[in-house]
Length: 495
Image 1 (cartoon, rainbow, N blue to C red):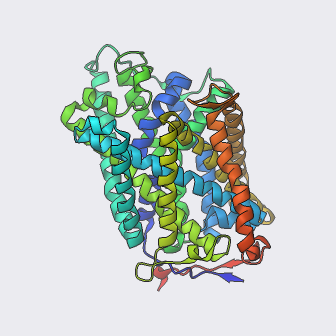
Image 2: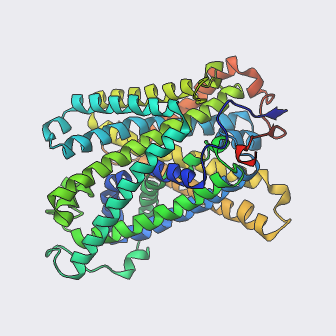
Image 3: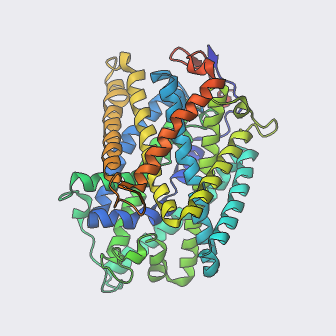
């Protein structure tokens, strides 16, 4: 069976555009604001080391994505590859995990974008109002969903602007902070950067696991360029290259910014210190005014807002395309297989992701802000799950050809397997830690709320898959997608 021609516009995005989409989905400014203080609370000054440790399995997993995309550049990405390797049920659950992670991130990203936008406009009262956050965030999702429907080229151009803003501000804040530290103008709380911050000596396995699961959240999104493979120039090479390049670019950014912020803020429990509980939810913007002054600090707030918007945009577009593939292969109802006649985009899937994201966000916001925070942390479990499945799928897919060359052995076998095992360990150790009732801000009896939400959402995929089986028997019987399915993708750049 030959599968292809899903109705998407081929040859639209180049290598640079793919990197932009991958980095936008990671949303470095927002991710740093969200996780930096949390990692510092776990590992102290070793935060740069944790970013390096967290990078290694991400890079090795990115090799797996790249090698699978070289042979099968399908917009279903993880779903398609896992199904071909391990069968329909594993593939469906891997696709479900990616969907859950994206939908949770849509609502949370919209909320963060709204908060920082209102703060930048000096509307602090509205920024603290849940009603205002919901209204502005929902409006942002509507606008971004419309952009996604208009076409992947429009999405890519919008993200390029947002990426330039956030990277420019991160670079500015980091350089100015380090300059003030070395010139002794940062204040008494500042500390001189140490090379030892890059080495994880003295950390326990539990510390590394808890810090690494936060790093999974911080790095998550570099794979967003893979579901747009069928709309990319040279689809057998560029999406995979972009994923690897994005992880390297993000690593450099995280190490630079974490060094600068640790050195400038210090580790005190008062003021701008990183161990001040009042800074736990946002370290980056708190340092804006002390580092670059009030005027530029407003631009930093806008950069964090734009970073969140870029993340929402890249949750909508790639996830809708993954659902398009699931519709085409009859793993989801046929409306998911529809594309817009004029714009050649999966409008139905985009609508479902947008509505689902906003719904999850509203439900958790009504329950409590604490449950919302724990829900966001729990999505790292879903992310680690489908990353590991994809890396294992790479090894299994190429198992018979691993000894044909040294390149295939390392890039299709050994390195993806190490990445898969590392991510699996992070998943399992984090799940064990999250089970404790004092992990996170909520609990359900003797069980931590982060564990219940994370594992509960993953487990929910089983009954949803069973319901999908009712209308998708051909897929679950292996008729529409299997190891022998030939995937063909038109490369418009070749014509």
